[in-house]
Image (cartoon, rainbow, N blue to C red; front, side, top):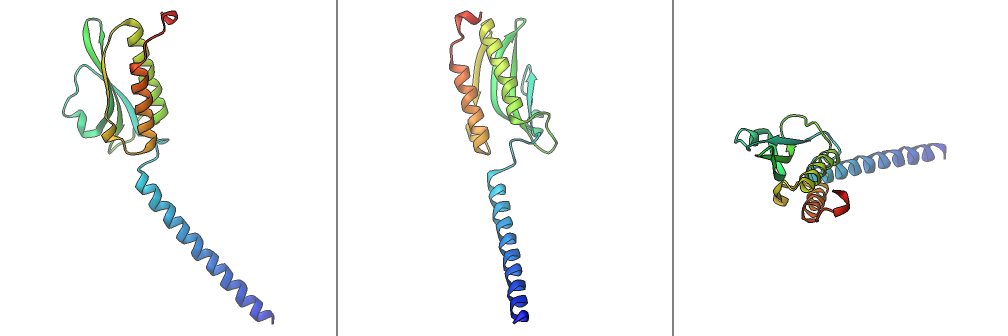
Length: 145
């Protein structure tokens, strides 16, 4: 009787191990489908006068704004960094872009902005692009000036 209970206990442990292993495989596949985590350091805000072809080798511009600084056009790009580690998490890069947009709008120097939704890899990036685009279209409050 004890041997039967021992064999059943071992079989239950083996079955639980197999189920746990299968579950971890399913979770790993799901994470691969969603792309890399937006909480990792894989973003940057690239400030430049002109987007160069060499920038495209390591940066994927997800959002772009143009504005005037000291009578010269400048650009800010929220970028996903490829191949190397970025400087910011997605929410940090969003905050930098929001600050740039709001500052340029208050000064009246914002020229344009555009979100590249087709380059977004996951829902987090799409949500950030939507929020940035919404902020870009809003009019600044007169009391903020």
